[in-house]
Image (cartoon, rainbow, N blue to C red; front, side, top):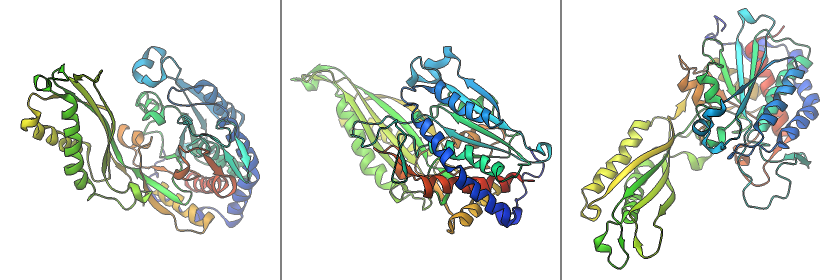
Length: 448
């Protein structure tokens, strides 16, 4: 890690000459067809998660491209005997991550930047697609397919952003690491994808100066954080009885419904008062709790003795997991004191939890991206918070010391993520994202 990593870099226009800026932008434009071709190839590999299909094939597609471009490439596979625990959605399907490293001309005295994207994608759903979800088709300037925006588009752009610098005749002084990881869409299991690279020491705070995760939020925004999340299930236990004699039983379903009602009417309005104006879209700016799954009973004429209710609790920056859990527990304690819930017992379990994350938008890596956005688009860059969680949390929360210099910037719009006929505009999104990344990388790492 460079000794001067904490110092603010020059702005793009101060660290690069007008002719260098022009050459990089022209190179990005010239490379757009190759970037598009690579993105289409990535989309044609069905990496739907769950269950986690074709990960080795996609990892090697990325790795082969990086090798072709001069990177030292390493594949990181989760041990097979750990898959049932580390990647429970994957059955026996292998989990393979890929890292490419490109050493700069003055690596010992310059910065190292790690650029990351996940190549797993969500299922295509049941709605009819007008374009093949794994076809990588281009129509009217847009490339269609699952992952076009979220986030194989980011991976393609990050690879070719570096190539734009080199095609412009410039050499990076600092070093670049590029990683493609798995399982982000199923919470980025701490020991399967980005979390696994951090946990096993493939990404270390003392070896890199900043991380850029190329998730799509909006091509003119720098994302400096994400909301926190708890995915939990409460199992209510009662006593089985015949449906014609409910007074002989303890109805676990009624207790579950009481919990949903109390949480909705007491906790819900309280959460609605907590907001963060940096979160996009607007609809995601308030803290929330949503009840998403309810399961109880096996037959219509028996009082159920077990009922599971699952919830999705979203935290805005400023809230903590501990406080969010305490609010849920307060409702459960309140219920135990109610006559209607006599005999109630419960088990609380979390499938996933992460603290809300926010990093300084005035730090060097954020500033250089904001400057590059303004230079390329003519618009003042927004500083935003993601409505969901993402792999930013691993460098920020799991590294020692925490790597606060971790931001999110990628081509495309979050509104395209997970939808039918997902797509990315080649000129205004993919190319613009490449240009912004290329200028920011060159400025942050230095060129000669």
